[in-house]
Image (tube, rainbow, N blue to C red):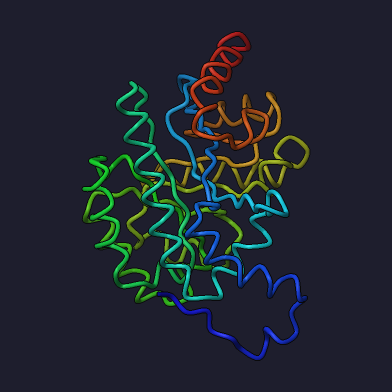
Length: 277
């Protein structure tokens, strides 16, 4: 069984936060932690090619608990590795189910700092892929710049082991860190996800447009693809397509939805984009 380690800083927490901490393990065992999926659209053909899996907690009393309220709590406990395995298992099982139904979608899963530093992560990922019978290149693992830099040596060892297994690697919230160019050339990543703070201002501020455009050109030189997060209108998508951005995601295309709703959502997204093209 995992352990939730109590520390002095928890003494200052809101009692409701401590209650949530106590309930998290029961939530995991009871299946209250579930996934929703946000579609990602490839810009050259306006097709949905993959999804990002996003963790949700459906509390039996409080209803939907915001990820901002519980994910930081999980990261402060020894539950994180267990939750990561749980999420990977659910995501890959769903990926396999969609494949059997004729939907070949890539699956992106976020990794926390402590998951990235877990030496068992590469073997856990290989085992989960084998159990679900999902090809490794169908899985994309997303890490933030800050997670990668928390312990660069250990992070790089883990990333190289994951890359060697055929898994795709992505830098999430790219551009919000402080040493991007210094380490980017050495990291075995295939994808950069541009932070939405650049995308929401793309049409209003020349500086944002210049950063986005130059990042896309840099990525192409490094043989990486760029995904723009936070696309909230058609004009922004058109601008990104002209910049040769690889893909986009955002609430304008679709909010995260459950697995049952996703096939219909994909059909609607692609119908809408075809009619607007």
